Structure formats: C-alpha cells, structure tokens
Amino acid sequence: MTKKVALIGGSSAGIGKAIALGLIEKGVEVIITGRTARLNGTKEELQKLFPSAKIHAINTDYSSADSIQNLIQTINALSLQPNILVLNSGGPNPGTFEDISLEDWDINYQQQFKSSMMLMKAFVPAMQKSNWGRIINISSTIAIEPTPGMILSASFRAMLINALKSTALQIAKDGITINTLCPGAVMTDRLISLFQKQADSTGKTLDETIKNVGTTIPIQRIASPKDFAHLAIFLASEEANYITGTVIPVDGGLVKKSF
Ligand SMILES: NC(=O)c1ccc[n+]([C@@H]2O[C@H](COP(=O)([O-])OP(=O)(O)OC[C@H]3O[C@@H](n4cnc5c(N)ncnc54)[C@H](OP(=O)(O)O)[C@@H]3O)[C@@H](O)[C@H]2O)c1
Image 1: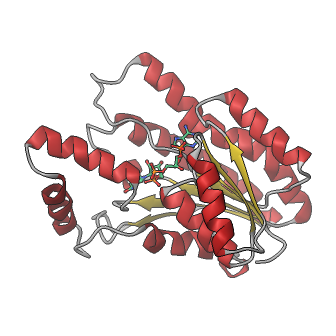
Image 2 (image 1 turned 135 degrees about the vertical axis):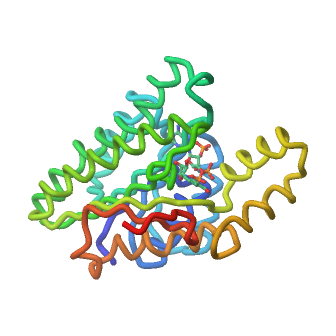
C-alpha cells in the first residue's frame, strides 16, 4: 500500500490510533488528527516504532467547521492528496431525549455528520480523477440497534450511513469504495469513561462493570483496538476493491439481527 496517503480522524488514541498504526505498517503515509497535545505524543510514539514512516500530525477539532477548513488547507499546503479517508472522531455524549439540549444537537451535527461531508467534498474529486479511493466510516452498533441513552449517536450515525450509502452507489464506478464499520465494545479511553459512568450509577466497581459487559458479548470479551483495526486496514487495501456500501458490525457477535 505504498504511495497511498491516509487521513485518519481522531487518531491520537483509541480506534483511530490503531488504524493509523496498521496503515503505517503497510507503508501508507498518514495524517493523524486530534484536538489536544497528546497528538504530538502519539506522533512521536509512532515515529519511534517506524522511523522511516511519513507521519503528519494536524491538531483539529471536528466539532468546529473552521478547524476542519484549517485541516483541509494545511493538507493542501503540504501538497498531500489523501486517497484513504477514515471518518472518525470522538463519539457524542451519552444521554436520553430529556438530557440532550438543542445546542448538543447542533454541535454534534457538525462533529458527527458535517465534518465527514466537508472532508469528502474536499478530497473525493481527486480520488475520482485518479480512479482510486477508500472511505471507511467508524460508526457504532448503536446505529443499527438504538438505545434510549445514546440518542445523539443513534441519530447522526444513521444519517451518515445513509449519506455514505447514497454516495457509494454514485461513485463506485470511479474506483472508490465506502464502507462503515460498527464497533460494539472496544477497550479505549471512551469505553472506559462510559463504563465509569455506568459503574457510578449502579454502585459497582469499574472492574466488575467491565467483566459484566464482557459476559454479554457472545465472544465473551471486549475487543482490543487492534482486533477492530484489522478490518479497516483490509478495507483500505487493493484487495478490498469489490466491497462497497456495506455496514459491518465488528462486535464479537453483539448485534443479533441476521441481515
Ligand atoms: N470504543 C468503543 O467501544 C466504541 C463503541 C461504539 C462506537 N465507538 C465510536 O468509535 C469512535 C472512536 O472511539 P474510540 O473508542 O477510539 O474513542 P477514544 O479512545 O476516546 O478516542 C477518540 C479519538 O478522537 C479524538 N477526538 C475526540 N474528540 C474529537 C473532536 N471533537 N475532534 C477531533 N478529534 C477528536 C481524541 O483525541 P483528543 O481527545 O485529543 O481530541 C482521540 O484521538 C467514536 O465515534 C466512538 O463513539 C466506540
């Protein structure tokens, strides 16, 4: 996968970082993003592991349209043309219809949906010209099976999946594939903070909560970021050229539906 350039959202930690690492291993030049100073730490860590890898780190907040514009301008100024786009950022806050304010809906529209459209508008035309591109959306099983306490996630992820499906049908002829991966439970900072909230509200310890959740998954354990990243890396490859428009749970069997 040399001569490929990947832009990976939310990649200073968690799932995005595991995907960045896997793509670097395959020889891909990567652009990693995140809001905070830990992005530089991640760049240094990855560069130490792969001294000859081309790694660019650009601080970006996906909840800000200006910040996304700045990301696009910086990539253009570096004369980079991402042909692998991993659509990912921090997930929305948990909460029910009653908990979520109208302002939360606006912020998450930008972060969970419009950021992806902005990046695709910026980079898909060049993919079309070169007749090659891979777009991989990191979503959630909540998009398939909504729960009352994750209303923002359930809503915007379903909206994005349908926008991507429409686009996948239109640009498949241009050598561009678009697929969505749905994590169930992957051991990252985000999951640990969600478990901590659950532990606090039930009076259980964090360890007990993690163990209990593990037993609800048919495979009987929570995934590592690496377990999850394998399929994203395959979907970014040449060999995945006949797979597009899909929504694939990578969830240890959590989602119960057949189709
Ligand atoms: N882990 C799971 O079990 C699970 C399950 C279902 C769905 N998901 C979804 O998968 C995605 C990735 O989750 P994760 O578990 O890898 O989360 P994570 O461990 O919290 O990592 C999130 C990454 O995104 C960055 N980020 C957070 N907010 C951002 C923003 N507004 N703009 C740009 N970057 C931002 C974070 O860096 P900074 O904080 O430095 O910005 C970090 O690099 C999320 O959408 C999450 O909801 C995860």
